[in-house]
Image 1 (cartoon, rainbow, N blue to C red):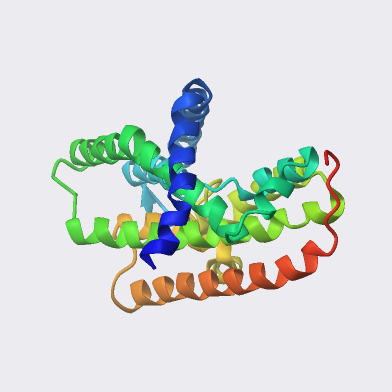
Image 2: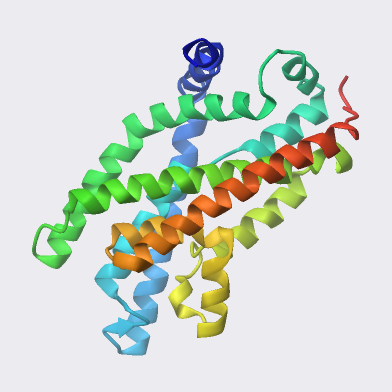
Length: 272
C-alpha cells in the first residue's frame, strides 16, 4: 500500500504547484464565488423583508446567512474539475500521455485534486470556518461551534467530494464520444446547483419534490453537509443521510469503472 501511494505523490505535488503557479486565477475565482455569496445574501434579505415573516420553511434570516456562506465553503471543499480536465485532455490530445502511465486513470485526477485541496484548505477553508463561526456567534449572541458537529461535517464533505469526483468522472467520459464538453458542462453545473440546494434550500420546495431531491445524489453534495453543520440533522436522520452518501459513493465508483470500459473503445483525440 505504501509503495502504491508513493506512485501518486507526484500528482499531489503537481496539484499544489498548479494552485501556487496560477494563484491569480485561483484568487479571482474565489473572489467571484464570494461575490456570488453576497448577491445571494441581498436577494434573501429582500425575500425575508418582503414576506414579513421571521421564519420561512425552517430558516430564520440569520440562519439563511449562515446557510449561504456554508454553501460557498462546502462547494469549495467538494469541488472537482474532472469533467473539464477530461474534456480538455481529449481535445488537445494530452490524454494519451496520461493513459500510457502505469497508474489508475481516475486516481491521477483524484491525487492531483488532493494537492489543490491542501493548498485551498490552508489559505481559504480554515479562515472561512473561523469567519463563519465568528459570524454565527455575533448573530446568535452565543458561541455556536460544536466540535462533534464540525467533525461530522468534515466526514460528510469527504463523502460529498467522492460523490462529486466520481460523478464528474462519469460525466467526463461523455467527451470520449462527443469530443468537447464545455456547453454540456455548463448545463450540468446549473442543474446540479439547483438540485443540490445551492440555488435555493430544498426545504423551500413542495414536500414531494423535496423528498425526491433529498434521495437523489445531488443533495448529498452540498445540502447534506450544510444541514449537518447547522445541526438540522441528528439521530436516525443523521445516520440515514450519511448512509445515503456512502451508497452514492459506491454507486458512482462502480459506474465509473463500467463507463471507462465502454468509453475507452470510443477514444479518438483531436490533438493527437
